[in-house]
Amino acid sequence: MATYVTREELAEPTGASLVGTLEGTAQEALNGRVKTLTDYAALLAYDGTAAVQVMAAGIAGLFRYNPSAPSTTNNGTCFAHASGGGAWERDFSGDVDVRWFGATGDGTDESSMVIAALAAHNRVTIPSGLTVSAKNVELQSNSVISCHGSLRLPNACTDFDRLLWATGKSNINIVTKELDGNYPNQLGNIGTHLVYLINCQDVYLNIQHAHDHYIASGAPMPSTDGVRGASTGGVFLHRCTRANVSVDLLRGWGREGIYLEQCEFSCVSLGHAQGVYATEYSGLQVKGVSNKITRASVDNAGASAVGFDTINGVCSNIIATNTRANNGLNIGHPGFPGSGSTLENIVIDGCLGYGIGVAANSKDVVIGNFNVSNAAIGGISFSDGSMDGKLTGGVVRNSGRYNLNASTTQVRCSNVKSTELDALCLTTNLVSGNFVEGESITTATGNAVARRILIGFTTRILFFSSVTGTFSAGQIVTGGTSGATATITRADAPLQKNETGGGLFIDESRLFPGTISQVRFADGTAICGLSFTCTHTTAGSPETFTQGFTSNVLWISAPIAVASIGSSSSTNSYTINRLSASSTISTITVTLNASVNQTYGVQMHLIGRWK
Image 1 (tube, rainbow, N blue to C red):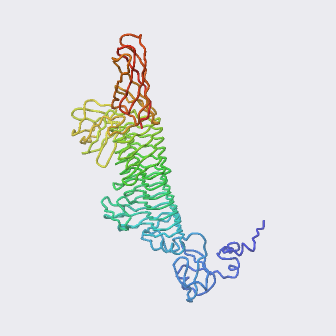
Image 2 (cartoon, rainbow, N blue to C red):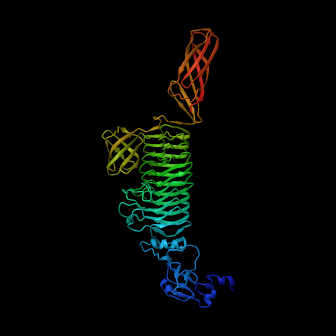
Image 3 (cartoon, rainbow, N blue to C red):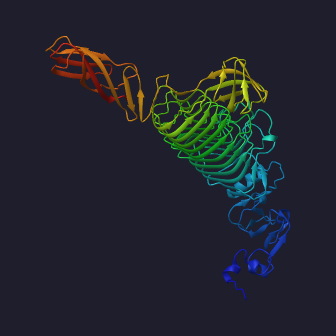
């Protein structure tokens, strides 16, 4: 069957492929006007004007002579003509290939090639299979990095080397298969960064795999640019607006793995972060206003696995496991509360602090759909001035000291289970070896089987469902199978709630028992029922009786009080001329006028507001 092509197709820059094997238009091919040359050196030496096909691998492409172009060379897309007038211009569309500018992926520092490619076109691609070592590549507004291979920091970086960075730019688009911090080949007390963006807006960052980021454990992290601080880590955005950050896998990082600091209207998605090194802090930290985390999974972080210091934000779909220090999910840092934020769909299993910690004067934080277990201190905590939180729909279990902690605030609870407790939790300093779960742990005075073990940097937290004998601070514990030893620094019998600082967890309804009992409801309503005796001695005349509330009864304003006679000591033949009741927040007053002098049992019912 005959194949037809149109005049327009033959006139296309690649029309030669329809009638031959060379590039260029069909007319150029037919006229013999496409000359083949080996490489750039041959192109620079060629003084003809016919279209040229450069053939060398990696840099191959069609060049056309433009007599009116500046006679300049950028070693990739433009080469000065040998005559001294005009230039050869590469025929291409879309992104610039870094190989055109000399990048070969041979392991040497090829920063200059990447920088030159960006300068030429501001849209750069790194092809699949190519690993390019580069640092301090500055992005401009509208820069596009499309890395189908790998970008890696070179060997032996110096302090504050950044793979990709920008300040005060907009519309930055980075899509990369791999960012490699090259940890094994870095030396010294330095800090490096993979992506470092300051005061940028409209940022799109998509990383499939970031790994082996290097910051020395003792690196001082000076404010080289007036921004970098002690927590600045692998992927760092400061005061950026409308940033969309997505990282599928983060493995091995220094300080904060992904850190959005004082950003707004930004969104982060973290598929999974796996802690590897001793220098790691949080896997993800988001600080600012109206930000959101759509998902994050973090294992073995060296500080709070996920931090969310965002006002009026949303943090959802969080999994934090085996956190070596601090909290599983932390809300608020000094000066940066998480007020007005909603947290939902959260699973925390194992951390050396609180499972979920709300702090730093964070107000009106709502936490829903959570499952928190094996937190060394407490499951969920509201502390450090945090106020008026709400918990709805979740389970907190097997915490080291208490499942729920409210230091000074009132926290409303709805459908929250927090009754499952261990018999004992030990905080220890490891001396030798490593304990294993399921082994018998003994002291001179007790023994128990380790249900769960949490591993900190030097600390080991041991949970026991049941205990024989006693364990106390200062004793040495020994693992029956592992032979590991540690010194007990703290022994706790866990509690369901800790409210010793004046805070309260208020369930949908909760009884506060005492000589006078009160039931409080999450909507702020409270009811109280009590009885007391009134010995009436002024028959036919009113007499006043008072009763103070006990300390477990709390009213924010005077409740409504209703009184009735429940009993009488001598006779039931009497007439009540008057029975009235009133109340303040601290006392009840009853006025009684009866026809017979005797002792009457008065029943009181009160309803009011406890908050």
